[in-house]
Image 1: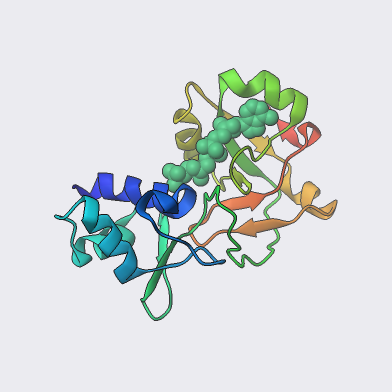
Image 2: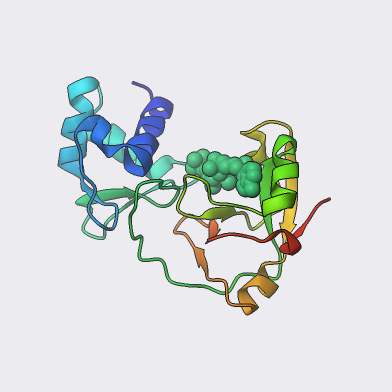
Length: 178
Ligand code: HQG
């Protein structure tokens, strides 16, 4: 299995479907590295400990993190399973960006940004990142979010370990189209 496919598998298992590999995540989303490796190797015997650590270290978006003692691994964000990442509330910059696809615009105009199956709405700190996020869904469209004001009105914001801003929802009146 190549690094790209291993990264995809880790995202799937650590964010959405641990039971796919008969794994359970703890309340903070962690799983012990030896358990994870053994579970992966039952399906993909060519995957090694070194390759697993390499994928964790080299993921360009730092999707995964190791515990301080190196014994456990988790996804840094993007979960649909209920986990408490222990994120500290943070003050966002005045503007953040949300990359989406043009086909979602009518619905977003009506109901704002909704978290859908994920635990949070994901926001980017810069436009190029938002374009990349939106392109995953179709013709990209970048909405500007008045994050500073939304935060002042009481909405909690969190900054994940890999630089993604997270919040519960963004009402339509805090969004600007290009
Ligand atoms: C859209 C990737 C209709 C929303 C990225 C998005 C990110 C609505 C889609 C992370 C809506 C959900 C998350 C509404 C929101 N009506 N559509 N009211 N509100 N949407 O994949 O933000 O590569 O769950 O605009 O980098 O695209 O996985 O969220 O288009 O950080 O590490 O519903 O996933 O990271 O799609 O991406 P997603 P997302 P990884």
